[in-house]
Length: 482
Ligand SMILES: Nc1nc2c(ncn2[C@@H]2O[C@H](COP(=O)(O)O)[C@@H](O)[C@H]2O)c(=O)[nH]1
Ligand SMILES: [Mn+2]
Ligand SMILES: [Mn+2]
Image (cartoon, rainbow, N blue to C red; front, side, top):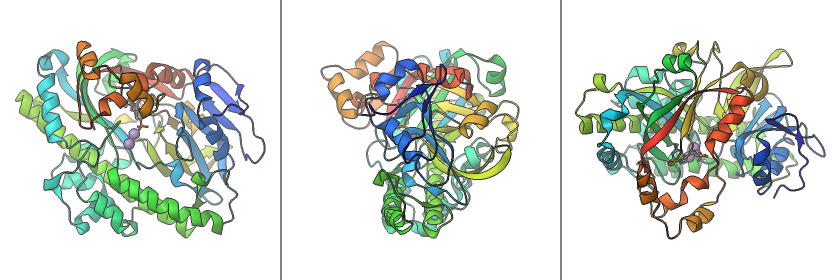
């Protein structure tokens, strides 16, 4: 519980944890007043304060409205560190390195798939291996090839027939984080990754067919290729067992490094190393390799989504228009240049359960979105809605170009299972016109919509605070859960 943490309301969307004790800076939380009581129920506010004690932190220790308790850093947390004096921490990235979201558009109106959603869901389910430890047995990669995946990310997938070069223009960082060093990936991590490429994984990972239910900004929507009642697909997955193992390996190393560098940490889970130390550089290079695995993973799944639609609808790629709107990472640390006190400064920005939200005209935003700003993809839950936003200048000024990443859990898996007992969630959602297929026993129950905050409230905060702008709301029609 974060009961003792002082919290000062600054305005309708901003709350401050004043700097005190060992904190080197203040905490700044974006959220609405009605979210505060639930927030105090877990350790996440304490975690915002803990992050503020880390060496070299620049600006406030930030949290987005989907904040909840995580490993060391809160999920929904953003923290930037000076390259020369700051640290990098695996806890600030999370176990699922480059877990992220990809939104695909189509040229289809929802009426064109009416009556076919069940078949689309079933075919997606058989084409995309899903569930805990899911493996694609006919897709084994020998270690030298896997190392190419780790080096080149989504480009490896495209080169090997999964998608086209244009896809790469619609992915954060072009689908490849520079500086990846596959030689730093342990044998155990390679072993866990060798047959998990092109798999969804378990729990909250999903592929979802939906449609555009509401448009908030017609000009932005048109520029992003989005229209009312359009069929869409969202893919949410990450770096699977490989990324998990990379995180585990480096937590062990950085626990030792924290002692070596004499860090006085309020929580061992914040273990870290100076960014410019051998341990820090190794973690960043291994993290980049795992991030590239995740980009390739989402790219391969995209290929199977395209094949599925072609197979079920009997349409060719041109008629389908199944193209990427964008692909964003929401668990990553990146070296970026931001303006701090009026001067450009190179920082290592940790986004853990947070999305980059760069504005129009930013050099890292792809040419085709220079006028709109970077698309930001915010999944909600399998029963309500998800959002498409864009990044803003305000985000650059306040949050190192960052925003929320989802609704955020409010019930533990155990609590959700209890809430779902005696109910058929599949039937309840079917009655609302949403077809669900879950791979794991209990997954659907653990993932009931009430397990998450209402993403509309989360999005109202980031839109109201000006750190992102609403473009469209998407409604689910059929979901495969891992
Ligand atoms: N549209 C859907 N959104 C979902 C579903 N399951 C989870 N979610 C949302 O995704 C984020 C991802 O959070 P992460 O921390 O696990 O990366 C989560 O907060 C939910 O809001 C779904 O089936 N469909
Ligand atoms: Mn995720
Ligand atoms: Mn994940």
